[in-house]
Figure 1 (cartoon, rainbow, N blue to C red):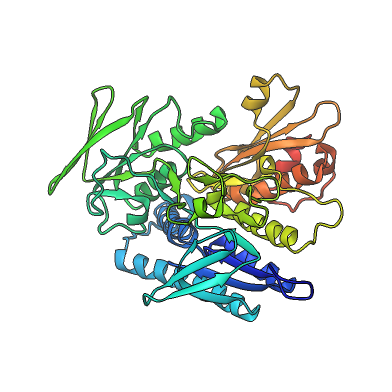
Figure 2: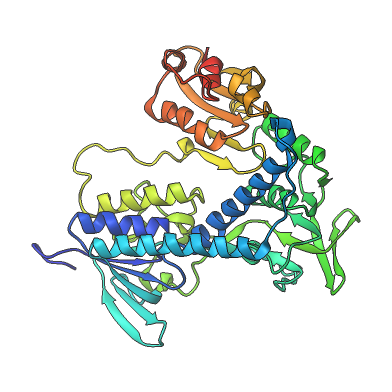
Length: 458
């Protein structure tokens, strides 16, 4: 361990949002920081999943907007997807973001090692570099942020050609003629929207009786109707049980005897933590289903070993991972001398980049009623918004959940254009303990979609 007056030695295994944020903050606080990353600086889940998917969705959105040009008073414009140009665009975005993060680490004096790290003991990390060499690092603080990977059941037979995981689909080897998506969670519905926008026929296998299980039923209903209007086939209440694939296409069998036929199938059924071969047992780190068990400071049962991001078993969001990384650096470097705010995961905002977009934060209406909590719910449709009519997109609504006694904003949901941006206002209200009155008294821009937030708060 570092003696008094010596710089604390941080070894961070995994250079995703959690690891890199922790590295930059710890370095600013005076620590000697080493980051070990085997794939891509910035995180595989972030730069190889999240960013490419949003880039593809943006391209699909541009295509849809051009196709709808006549409704905006323009002559019809025909558009065609350039698959190779899209692939090049995604690669360029990934390269630029990785270079930006690498430069930031370098500017903070962080040492970056390309390789794989594992714990030999609670304070010793062995790194196997990409050239096959090894290096032993002594650590006063260890941060584990190795992320996760797509879950693949034994029956799936993933080949990367016809049967795809999410990592095979940014973009896939070829544009599917008919894509079958297995899984109707956040990732699954984004893929449905994405490839439908590109012109593919799409079928979605939904294991429950609504898409987005766990989300507000009113929110899910808007998305389901949008899918139906766009020709998406929904197989409700079905679980995929096996896949047959050949040169002509795929067949997805469900547990109730139905069979979906398509050209390709994509699995979007969750993820599993990258905790194998980390040496967790050697260091005495406790896990639960592969996730590192952490406290409110993201600290494991071994006091100087922390976990951030997907590996921590908390919300699998890049924003959450980054916040965890900052909190870890502050805690490990003694910056929490007085009272401080722990991460409140229940107040994390999230978004789904479908069409229309979906975003929520805090207490959900259905959950509150199920728990018997007293709440006030107000909802205003975007159809009353001048800006929504100008945009030719009046779909969706703003819903705000508040405390009926105090007016404090407890949560909210938004369905509609730019929901991912607009939810930030409600997220700030939830985090800061603002009231609906505070939102009503805010002078929003006119005409703007944000005006509906004030109306929903009334």
